[in-house]
Length: 182
Ligand SMILES: [Zn+2]
Image 1 (cartoon, rainbow, N blue to C red):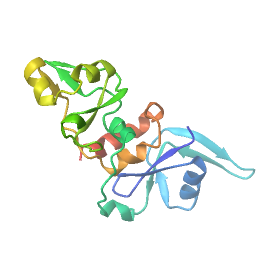
Image 2 (image 1 turned 90 degrees about the horizontal axis):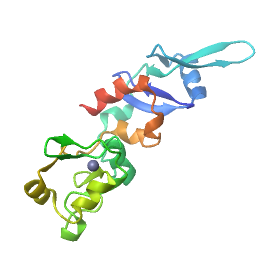
Image 3 (image 1 turned 180 degrees about the horizontal axis):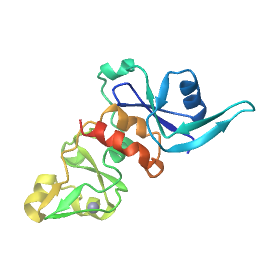
Image 4 (image 1 turned 60 degrees about the vertical axis):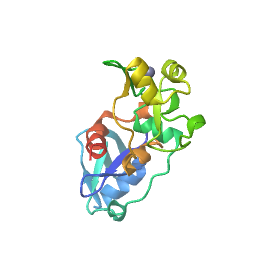
């Protein structure tokens, strides 16, 4: 994947850039390596530059201080839930891939259509088992619960929506986990 994760000066994920852009930032002294993992070496006739998987900007990006409201999308919900079904049945957390989106309060019962707090990733069997029941009903009748309360994600998770989850490099994960946990 021709991409490098850029951290701002507060070590928060800022954006994802191409190898070429990363080299420019390094070459101009605007960023330094933040990871030992070298993902490629860019060569020109006169110079070669090792490109790290993660680079760190020298100053805090402006948007880091802004709070904007992320728009809820189906792909955003799946990314927030790491593409794994969010239901727990009794004491057993489901580990199947979330191939569907479940409305905790079904739209047929007045639930919001696109809402970070009303949507969770769900496997197909659990989505069809829940059908148009509310989570409260499933909790009473079958002991269902959620792995965590659905939340409005921060910007780093939305940035990741542009990168398929299965190609996110392992060297990015410590930074992304730190961000998601705040
Ligand atoms: Zn499931």
